[in-house]
Length: 149
Image (cartoon, rainbow, N blue to C red):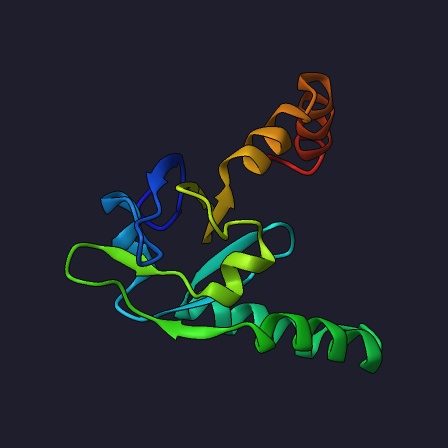
């Protein structure tokens, strides 16, 4: 499982806007990584290889040029190369905190989502999780079983 990011933790956002990244996620994240707006109400932290793979998929996709421009603008305009401090904390920019409803919050959810980490407003994360119906997940798993999973 060391190649995948999983689980979630609620961590404090300190007065300087730093949040601890769980130790079991740090190794996969790497020394330098990319922080960007996620495709939802969260900040996404991508290991360098996953960020490059994402951008390559966008560029080599069959999407129209206009759609490629929009997704690239959305992702890249908010992206920064980041590192963690010696205590494993990330300094979250005010700009990103405002975009994902973290400005003024005292805590956030750090969620390992397979190939990237998501940082969520705790209430929004809980709402998102609560909105998923068990039967919907069972139906999706049935679809995956149909393709050999």
